[in-house]
Length: 173
Picture 1: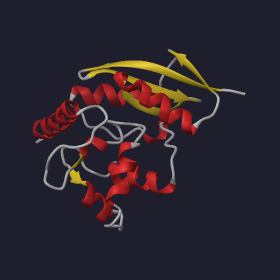
Picture 2: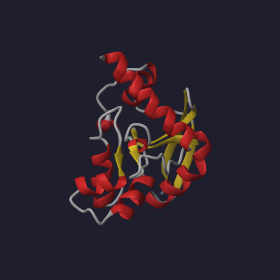
Picture 3: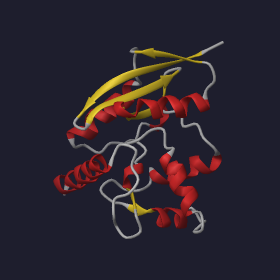
């Protein structure tokens, strides 16, 4: 028996996003030019996937993305997302959601927050495997020296997202 995964395209200021859902829950959000990454990650998590282009994505996710790109920081739609990973990965992804919009944290700082300062590489790997970019803000993690590093969507997009969030905060003040 196969599992249906619906892939919907969302037009963002950074290019089209691919939103993949299974049973009405978002399992992956990434840039359309990373569809190979989407298929690789989800094929490891779910066996016998039947890829369906179109359908619907969770309405709360679309609403959040609309607000985010319009400059409004809203509550994360985590109830509409199915984050599948190891307990360690889930702890990293949960910690990412606690980095405030407009702020950043180093991989070492994130490892410290998780109570495991020696796990910098493991934190970086879990961050790289984040299946729901933007909503689970892996773009807020930077190098210890303050440089932008390691973003599957590309460093230009990472910079745009960080600048966008800084502007949202400035406008809210």
